[in-house]
Length: 71
Image (tube, rainbow, N blue to C red):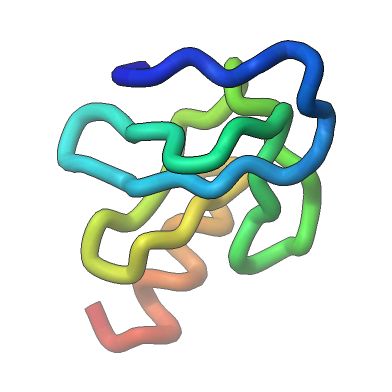
């Protein structure tokens, strides 16, 4: 991670998704999966789309969004 989140902020973080990393723009403890709506703790965030700037809880959700968008 380029910027560590503030442990005192337990709300939703605002993230800029990069090719191999992400940058915390506003501190928080989690982000919301764009497909399932589940909370993803930042230390567990492994799947996202740079093009769509959205996170996914797992590979299945990432693939689902990819297929929905036509690739």
